[in-house]
Length: 393
Ligand code: MLT
Image (tube, rainbow, N blue to C red):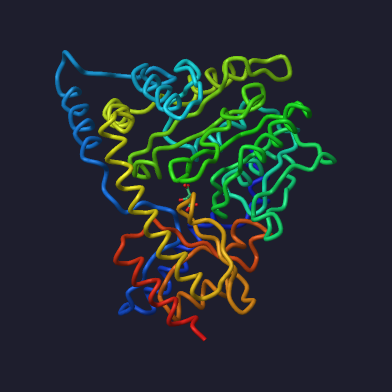
């Protein structure tokens, strides 16, 4: 019997598990301190009322023989896939309902999609990067290469035509740096992928936070249907971090190595996934109704205001940052050239505020730090007050 030795190549703890561990240790030693957590990007507002109503009605359906539901369709119920397709249409992007797979979230799909690709592909990720893209490919034994995001490119890495990659993970608006690609920048990636016969795995989990004229989907870019798979999630858009629902889009025309990728993913899902429950799919469909969109936008506006509160404080302190504008994340340069874990400890000990050390997202995150705007308003204001007090010279 042999275990998967690729696990030995992972960092010992998943980043957010490590942060939780350090925070809990601090709280054990300092039980009287009130710690404010702006680390993991977890939402704090409740689900929108229309979403809760739909979920309750869905649960009631399960209580009656006439409306009871068992296994859902592998790709998700038609009404939800159609609602997602209509949502894309609302910002001018054509995604047919029969190219949508409903899932339990973007994190699982971004990690699981590797099942349809061979282990000897080279994977390109931007650095810093959402750890799931890296860790899931390390587990599979794939070679990983990095495209640098840094202050010079506004933490939005661009392709290098001298580099050969087969699978490319992009996330825009970006986690963790909050930067968002323009149409022209994304077109460069699409052109690179088509030219190199590569596949882009595009994580659009934060698209609902875009406020400027920037692409909300990779399919807003000409040529993307022949090279890109898109993942999205209701976690941040509609507060589903605990409820779990997302979707993956695979254009039916997308082929590589003589295989149809939609067909491969369908086969994979039918084998390993039994779908999202009826009440949750009903709740998800309510997100895309007219009233649902109105209600979730109020919640998003609340987080956007938090982001403004944080970024205004950084402006006042003269600290460099990206994000906060089209993104719930604010990515800042640690003051006084501190290392990112050093700043993590400093902030936790001196201000009792938890953030995420940039180094946890990759080498280029060293010396940077991420704050999230998903806290509640009172805590965000208090955290900012403490940070300002601590860092004011
Ligand atoms: C984060 O804080 O980066 C996110 O919560 C991670 C996730 O969405 O899984």
